[in-house]
Length: 377
Image 1 (cartoon, rainbow, N blue to C red):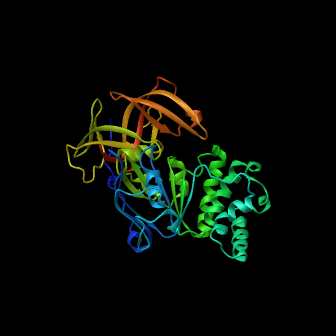
Image 2 (image 1 turned 60 degrees about the horizontal axis):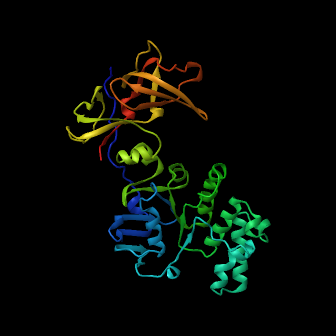
Image 3 (image 1 turned 135 degrees about the horizontal axis):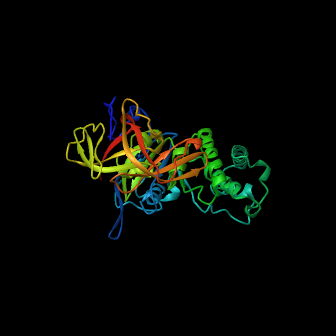
């Protein structure tokens, strides 16, 4: 292994937001605990969600994100803690008395009603004046591009159109906050990608705070202004998509957001000592020597050196054997086995006319400044 001196420190701590204290919070979740018998689904959760923000609750199945959404909506009561909307404590308030609306994954449209009647149902239940109902209805149908479909029934619509009907019905009541539980899960991949952009556009137009639950990190990264990553009922990090990707707070977040290569070992003054490899040079920031941790490298930050090619200044290198190459759309992934270390190391982006063969020995390189050192949680 060879290395040039590092050029700057890699960041391993949680990123902070300098504007966080200057923006209005519409929802403040304060030390919320939710228990189902002996199971603690939410464990001391605190989140502040800003006015007109598109906020995502992201995590694997069973992590507690839908439970938290239901607590905000009033469909579950918290065991401890407070949920504030503006300056009002919502704990103990029935769902219908909260200035929030919830869009369910199933859409829950009335099959016998036309689009127009599905959307207007909540307004008519509130006995609003007819002129106001019609004005709101026309406005929201225009915003979600359903004007030409207003007289159709749900079984005459595509999946994306039904999704827009459910969304229109939710926002026509002008809630302070709209809660969305896996709103795109029922759509195919292509339509889901299109609707991610559509949801973001619509949220910006109507100026309502959106809180969306998803297990799809690409979906959260595309739509959300900020994301709370949740695992086992705890919030691990709250940050913008770019901050989560560039400066994850720990191993779980780094692995869950995008792809990451991890080299596990013990932190030393000059880097991380990895069994079977030796000391991998890295800037360890404020992590004490002797701490169990990882050197973490994104696949796109690494490269394969050509035979005989020397690394550039500020790059670390490791010897590797090519296990295989895979085409993934516009990208090429090279899977490597590092000498003396189990598990694959992935590199994105070898040129197609320079693809290595399986079994070929190469060196993999990356800039030390682009690697992270993370504590082992």
